[in-house]
Length: 319
Length: 293
Image (cartoon, rainbow over all chains, first blue to last red; front, side):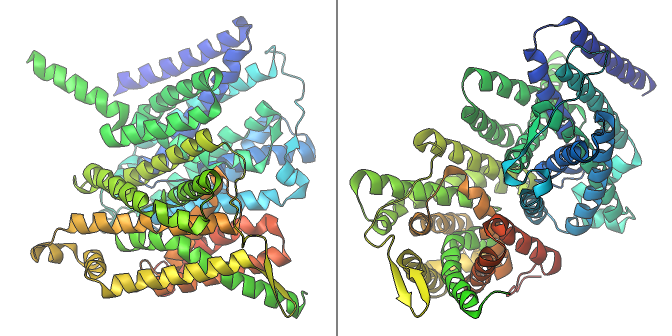
């Protein structure tokens, strides 16, 4: 356990050093543009699986949290010109509050009702933003990037590093939850909510906590996106594609361990980036659908399940 | 404050629109309401049916309603195949279809959506028929003929399906399987075959519903997302599987949308169905006419 912990922190530190070194050495802009999107999806998928994986509540409202994160940043930039750190901090707080509200409203529903309710929340928020003139309404809004910090050559490189920090933060939190009493409680209520409730697990409070943490992380991941695209409009940031992509990443990777969504996000994220460049964005969505269906049908436990089965098979073969 | 005339107009249009919403929700009322399958791909299949109608109308100049009837058998087989796959993957193994069942059907919906885009492009499409574009003048009101057609056909379809479920042998079997699958099994019937048939019917009625959809307004490939809200709102509010409930809930939704459209404007319209759905789920999850606990 202890050695495991040291390995994790060393790994996280090495990852950040590598990302920072990359921003200093690599001159080509494309790796940062593509890499930023993949890192963003890692944060979203890890955050999603805190509620969706550990507790088994299939949240289709990822786009709601992501979009609110984007628009929190947009609003702050327009109203006060706040720096990036403030935008992300504010988005985290707004996300936590939104998670609390969404949780109170929906977490008593189960199965498909919860899923449908989260889609509904996303659309209702999208429609409200569409009708909010101050942040551009349906037409969207353009945003100017401020000058970049001295450490970095380029704003996108800085965003890339910031998103890498968020990845480490999200994974650390997910790992802590998985190992602590929170994760055990969530898993208990996923397996049998009534039995968990009867044995004294505070199910509603645990679900609310998971929803708050998950929502805060998703909003935080969305905040830098405004500066990344330098533009925001409701129909693209609240797009249902975000919700299904993130859910697919978590399910493809496997939801029993924090590694699952990371692996899934890397696999699907890289595939989509390659396809978007080489073929088209429509094929992108097709691949998303096909991979989702394939994995759900053929590999219910995701990549993690496949790895576990393979290693068990090898162990039996050797014995 | 809006005038009485305008309000009356909005209500009449809303009732007509509501009957149309009932027609597009009937299938979901069977597949989700009676069979308990989280059929989130239902709206995508609806749009697929509409594109089938568009294709026949555009290529061979067939009347949209007739085209809808022509593709009905194909849709039936498609529905049977989808249920078969769903059953073999989830229900048969008896493990939680919940999480992965929804993900599976969403995956199917996305695949259908993209295939439509690849085949027909992202532009809006519409059909041509002699009655589209005309309007009846009643008093101060102008009512588009296409809405009246949709209203008449949708009402007929609703009555037809309600009668089918309550009067025929197969219809009663479907309702029996929804109530107590095990009891049915003990009587020597095969519940899977009945559910497969029911899912086929639920998809087959999308032929006519899809024709009505493209008669009422032009369609585009991602239109299914708006109809996730509308159809689930109607089915949940109507009380899962009750045809009368579906009709009443659809009319309530139609009138609400129509009134918002003529007061607040079109930009608020997409949120109406989803907001009502949220309200129903939060306050009265068993629906307006629900009987299930």
